[in-house]
Amino acid sequence: MAIKERDEENAVQENIREPLMRSGGEGSGHGSSKEDPWMVYLSTFVAVCGSYEFGCCVGYSSPTQSAITADLSLSVSEYSVFGSILTFGAMIGAITIGPITDLIGRKWALRVSCAFCVVGWLAIYFAEGAWALDIGRLATGYGMGAFSYVVPVFISEIAPKNLRGRLTALNQLMIVSGVSVSFVIGLVVSWRALALIGLIPCAVTLFGLFFIPESPRWLAKTGRHQDFEVALQRLRGKDADVSLEAEEIQDYIATLDSLPKAKLLDLFQRRYLPSVLISIGLMVCQQLGGINGVCFYVSDIFEQAGFSSTIGTITYAILQVVVTGIGASIMDKAGRKPLILTSASGLVLGCVLTAIAFFLTAEELALSVAPILAVTGILIFIGSFSIGMGAVPWIIMSEIFPINIKGQAGSLATLVNWFGAWLCSYTFNFLMSWSTYGTFILYAAINALAILFVILFVPETKGKTLEQIQVAINRERNEEK
Image (cartoon, rainbow, N blue to C red; front, top):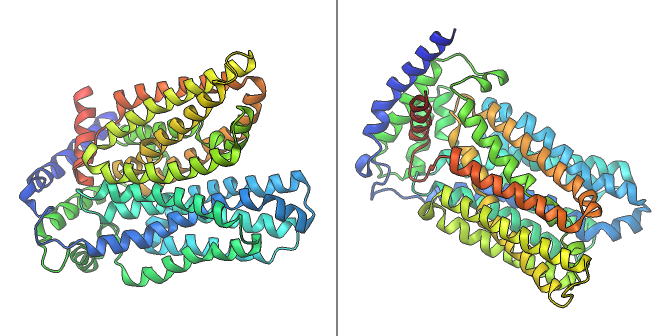
């Protein structure tokens, strides 16, 4: 069996290498001066409205807690269920959306995601008790988990290689924008009005989907070759020469079609294992480094450190949006790997500074310096996460899987991400009760391990087509043998 599998892998390598290498140069048609990317930009805008909706779902519970609790007479435990059930909905969305996306296409998967969010927001708006609230929150969680997979995959499949990084990074920028805007708007409108406002990004996405093409790679994979050529031409511009890019995609799809249809257990075969481990490893590094604990309880952290929670939280929200935008703008110039290494290094520094601040507070030493160190550490942590660790794992996840296993593998990686998010947020208060400075020392150690993982295992995908990335991963694995 091992010999047979190796023969199949060698066949894949031989079949795809020639067209990929032939079309990989600057004059191959991928960077043609006649290309007009306006349809790519429009399609990306429609898709990232789903990312903004993701942020609206996350940001809803914080500014509405006191009003919902008072209006519906909810206990603390009932509101806690309402807040946390979002993550469980996202896990369900992560498990199911990959196969759905492969079956009905990227555009219809976006419609499904929107539908769940619409139902969820309406249930919350009309809620008169805890059950309706929870059902609505679970539905918006499902839509949020689905968006977290579909949006980066769709963008990575429609974008030319020279724009793919920065366009996919807009996913993270729109998420943090949605969180920040929902927090601010939630301070001045009622919780029911804020639920209705959450419908707006869904409406924009559903309307915009009528005007943009489906993913050409998905159309090719499903055998709709005429639609594939039309979609690719629309995305690259009517005067662009797409023949070589189309040939490259079709050659790769034809090779994949010669292999058995992938099942979940197939992800752990030798040919797919490097991509799966890289993606899951990055998701673990992203979530267990402490980001959700810091985000969910940032006000409490500032208060424990003796700093104004209002000023700190507003600064945090602005910094998050600005730095994420900077990261998105330089993604395709700096490269994925340098950005994530810089990000992880900053996370270590931020954790160390925050740990020192809490240690000084616990030992009642240099009490005038501790708040400044804590704020500096948290802001460095947030800024560092926003410039790389927030967006890059999702970008790489959308790039490194072959299209025949992208649905199954993407669902697995997204599920790991959401489970890590729940684990981090659930354990944060327990860790802080154990030791405030010990908590951030632990996070610093995890982020240091993330640096080592990225150096050893994560490939650079900047400037490569999705098909060329597969060739590079396969070549590295074969050289290791």
